[in-house]
Length: 284
Image (cartoon, rainbow, N blue to C red):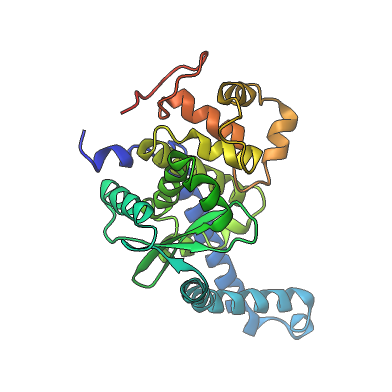
């Protein structure tokens, strides 16, 4: 199978249909706001200063300001990252830089993303973002240090996951605008976010089939990824079912970590074998 055809099939099967639904819903919301704003000049005098009219005016102003506001946030975030974080290069943590370069090629990215190491103030975090003409990934120091020395496969998984967001256009301006309103609806927005995370997990595992410890670190914290029994953790994910589990998941932007781990083993995207899981996609 070609280098670029395999990643295209790694998107979670429910993500694209749900995204299309959210885009349609977003368009309906925008049309409603525009139509409501258009009626304001023709309101009866008794309604002109009501709370309803004020709400519609505010929504219309927000609609007009959202696009430039989003652009400002995207551009200033990159500027801030460049000013406060260490940019990786062939001479600055060259091993990780070359891994990122290799992954970008395997995923068929049109441009090589920049990679930064930032002070995360103790958080285990990483994110992908985009500004005009630039894609980039930021790794928090706490995550980087814990994985680079003794768990490079885990770090590669996380790096592949973040590049998946770029590969699937989750960070592009057109994508963010296409769901800018519908994504803020409680329950619906988090549901789309969780599907994106599942899709990017598949990219991370495809690029780093031995990187399960990257998720273990997120589940159990620092210095535990090599001592935690992954098989038991996968079984914990298999047992994570029921009404209260589903209810607790609804407002969350990320799936439960043990469930993410269990699904990747079930798909066969991680090389390690855990008894009781059925492989759907052979590793390779």
